[in-house]
Amino acid sequence: MPENTPRETPSEEIKPKKKRALRHRTFVTKPAETDPGAVSAAELNSSLSAIYQDESGAIPDMKKINIKKTSPLITAITWLFGIALFGAALAWAGFFWLSPGNSGNDELVKLVLTGPTELTLNATSTYTITFQNNGTAPLRNVTFSLYYPKGFVFATSSPALKNTLHNEFTRATIAPGESGTIVVSGKNYGALNERKSWRVFMNYTPANFNSELQKAATLTTALTASGVTLALGGPDKAVVGTEVAYSFTVNYDSDFTLPSELAPITPSNFIITSSTPALSKNNLWNILPNKAATTTPDGAPSLRQFIVRGKFTERQDTPTPLKGVLTLPVGNDRLEIARAELAPEVIKNDLDFNVAINGSLTDFASTLGDLLTITLHLKNTSAATLKNAVVNLVLDGPAEKRQSILKWSDIADQANGDIQGQQLNATTRRGAITWNNKKIPALAQVKPNDEITIDLRLPIKDAKAFDTAAIKTPAITVAGNLTFINQNGATETVSAKPITITLNSDLKFEGRDTVEKDAAGQDVHTVAWVLGNSFHPLKNIFLTATAYGDITIATSSPSAGTFSFDPGTKQLLWAIPEMPESVDVLNSSFTITLHKNDPTQNTLLSKVHILADDVVTGQKIDLAGDEISLNREAPAP
Image (cartoon, rainbow, N blue to C red; front, side, top):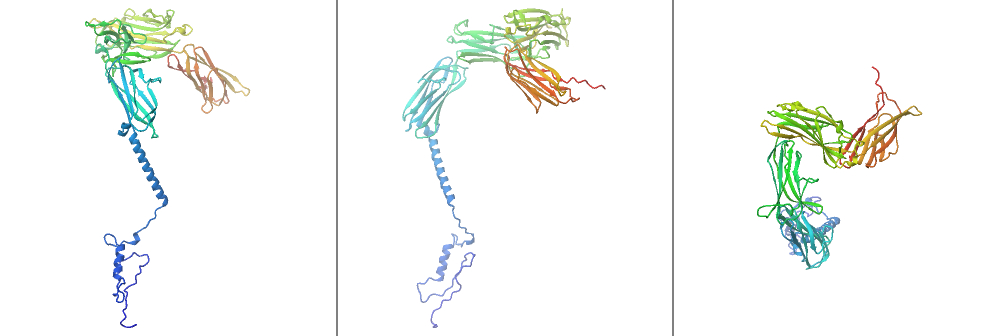
């Protein structure tokens, strides 16, 4: 090669090494003398740097750059999720636009309830429900549901509300732009100033929407004028055992002509001794406002006063007030129109006087043929001497042909109190026993801390001695009174807490057991369970017992109900759904074979537990029958 021929001398070959990051390399070249259009190494180096460098001018580490490919499945799921989200947003927007209470719905559907909010008792009021379809689509399957406030009595409507409660109206379609009204009239009853609410719901489905929507309207009303008031007056303090009187005063406007009922509601520790006028059998006063009224001098209001007298039997830690409730009978309802109450302070007496029957100081249940063991107890806990004390015991019970259900001829009274009978009505007779200082000398002067006890026994007649069909009220009421002269010379009367004895069915149980030997020499017990009843029908009767030892039991069909035996628990059960009054006796029998005699076993069958519900009194009867023993004699010592 000639010497003057230009030569290119590369400083390094341009090849990146394997698995190494691209580094910035410098290319050294000689200027091209023969090819002016050739790209120089410096220009090439600058171009490559511009391609790979970042914003800060640095060349990234290619080892740390990972290229990820997107899965087609993930892409499809992402698209589906996006479409679903868009649809939900669209549906929510539509629901929000058409839902009740929304401004959009308010524009599409209008529902307004108007009428008087301040009412007068027994006056007629009219309410109007206005509806309108302001949308462009018909409303289909439209139902209006009206909820009247308690005390509103429906009278008329337009259009007619034909369902039983007169509170529903339907329309197949309400066209766009169509409006209408529902007008309802009725009378209002209730307590003065009691706030109540009307509620109307309109359910509908727009023709361009698949879901049912609802529109609501409410209106609050109150009775501001009743034409009647009730006041309760009496002493704000009462001594236990001392008679007090409380008055219930009803004031009617002259325009009030509805019959009403007044109920005195007394606490459990208050005994009503009398009332003026007399209370009905339902413990009510029935009032006709336009009759027997007492008017004030100006002749405007109509006043009536009702008085109840009674005694507090004990002091309560949390006293219950006396109340008066005035109601109007409207259909099958009793709507309250006035109420009054009074909570007197009850002061404990300095005497301890009570009556206990069969160990109970409170109400309990008994039955025909039972024996009543009665104890009257008096203790003077005061600092003064009681003079000329008289103890009186009154028992009111069912009667038939002027004969009491109590067997007075068999009374056992060591103090020999004076007995006096009184026929209260056709079905109730009273027996009163009185003890004074002639019968019990200690009653002449009962000094501080002195105690006097009177004991007596009085049986109840059984079904053989008394016609149970004559019993209209199956109960005996017992009340005790103590009268004496106090230190001031005044006569005082103290009453014991009364006791009501409910007469339940005379259900009786008899268990019979006969024993024979079988061919294998084993004892076979033939057991019969017999139920007897002649007073009140029964239901839900269950007899249960447990058998003991190595036994086999064979059952038979009872005269009523079902009889079963569980070998696992050795429980016997006789279940009887009902025993009507026309059925006097029911029985069931079974056999118990004792396979092995165990000298330590004394009982074959446990006591029989009998449960039943008295249909008349509503109380549960709980009895126990005798067990069946093996009659083993104890070994000699």
